[in-house]
Length: 177
Image (tube, rainbow, N blue to C red; front, side, top):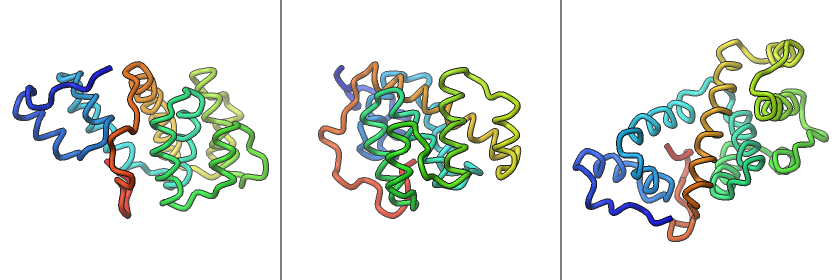
């Protein structure tokens, strides 16, 4: 699918997309002119105000991307995962869904992500396992993170967003918005 003509957008949307840089996801999102600002605001909250440790957040995001077959999401969030200190074993586990030798929290988040994706909820045992090391706030943020990235992966796949034409290292020291 073609990217929208950004110069044809209303001025306020041109400002919004410009402030987010040159990543293709932001450009393609401008097809949803009415919803894009809200989606971007939620995305900012999920990445920048999330109470989950960065490594657990990224583990869940990469797993969602892998399950959805969203190459764009996987590419960017595997890079972010490495920047925030997620190990290669955990990144591989996110690909396969097998917790292998992951730490207890990483294994539990990976399993919980798969349960959310498959059953759209968590059973009591899984919630209790997570609440042994997460606060209720962090558990809520995990569920919202998984849901947000389901939305984004569906969007990316539907609109066939690729990394073609993007800068090779768009992140610098911090995760993107």
